[in-house]
Image (cartoon, rainbow, N blue to C red; front, side, top):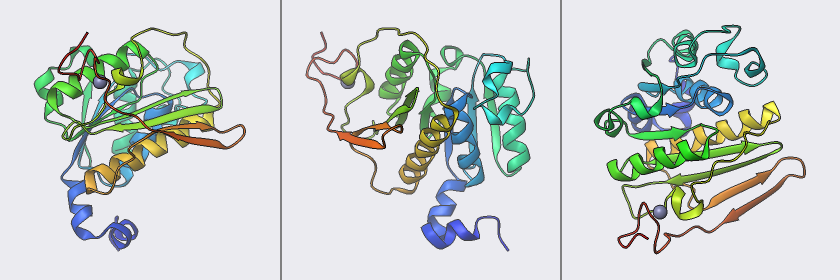
Length: 232
Ligand SMILES: [Zn+2]
């Protein structure tokens, strides 16, 4: 019995090989990052980078399950322990803050998954991904709500800055399972992207209190400061 037998039945051996040969940088090892890391490493993504400069705090543990009870440890290091326990085939690279990672290093990854709670940091990740033409899987969560979008910069794609201005907002609490649901969807979109399946083209907004899901068409903004040829 092979570790990936069930997955191979669904996606085929060729696609499983693609996953094993793929590399993904996960920025933020929090609530979204926990689900992303669990499913990407479980599915056999060969190389996973984890970026997080924070330490695990007691109030993180309701949703950031990769950290078990490792309060006080750096989150990227703690998440590495989780990934290596789940699947020792995965090569894990650990980074501190995203801003400190050399751009060249980021460009060597096949995809970046943004799991951070800061809007300004999301903009920085978006800029680097656009410049290096690295596909970006974005998600954000708040309360009972979440959103998801895929910006595949290998093709003509709108970007995060086409949708949102760079304004910092208060960090808002989230119902723990919403972090798991939306993080799982990010992992799913990442696997689809790595295997070459049809990606999500819209911005998906989800309200899990009332189970209202809406797809919003997104397009390149003419004067986007990041991806437009004629920025403001
Ligand atoms: Zn843009």
